[in-house]
Length: 96
Image 1: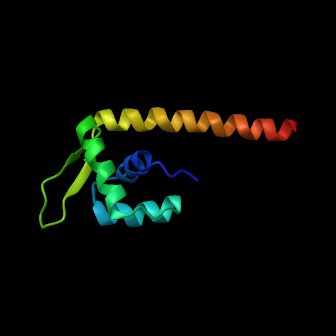
Image 2 (image 1 turned 90 degrees about the vertical axis):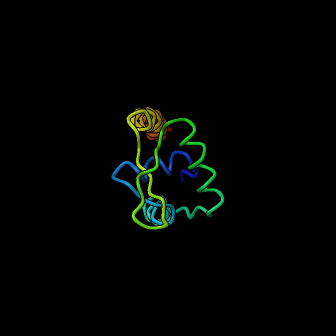
């Protein structure tokens, strides 16, 4: 189970803009991990500082975010590394 909030938030935003609670629900759905608000908003702050996500103009009090091009590149790189690890682990299990 992947529980890195940074990776989870980036993956959640990969299919479109979301506000915080929508991310919490989305992450719980696809990753079976429920991030608390403090964990989520701490990750959002770090991701925004790194330029990997950006706020989007809000129509109400909820602040949506979007994945930036740099964030998309970072997510793709991280997922590639995870894919390599999974393939290696599965291959080794077949040999055991």
